[in-house]
Image (tube, rainbow over all chains, first blue to last red):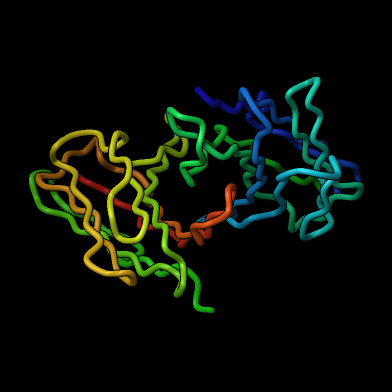
Length: 118
Length: 115
């Protein structure tokens, strides 16, 4: 069964510092991977997605993520964090059914809460 | 594009009462998902529909939970009777079926408190 692990529950970085949020997935084939962000009281907003091709994908708000098959990872990065980036970040993998086809739904990690120090 | 619309935003009810959560997906999207978010369990898929047909309801916790999608623009999630452990944020999401890995678009959620 597919699963997603986000090992860091809470991270604090200083404004202007670089950021890397970790995500590891368990999946038997080429995964479809996503990063979402959730601000307090809001739904989840898509930051970026990986389907195939270039392993470094660019997203909104200056975020990028790199797919590394050998490490089963899809870490999210940003070179310079802004105070408005404080939120919770979720990594997700596209689920497949018993016969391998896409089910359409996503399996989410438990999230990493990002705090930004001034 | 109005996005996925959920109502109500907040619901407070007493144990034993019936609760109905509503969702309007993005126009043109033909997959709809209900998720529940709690501190303990994170985001859990409850049920999802493709073309108004329930595909997988294995995440529905008990028979007290039911979901319907009578047409392409409306879905409900009902809890009857409600219990305090049902307190959570319930999210509806929609996507366009047809490509593997289509991203989900989420509503702002309904925060349910059962006392």
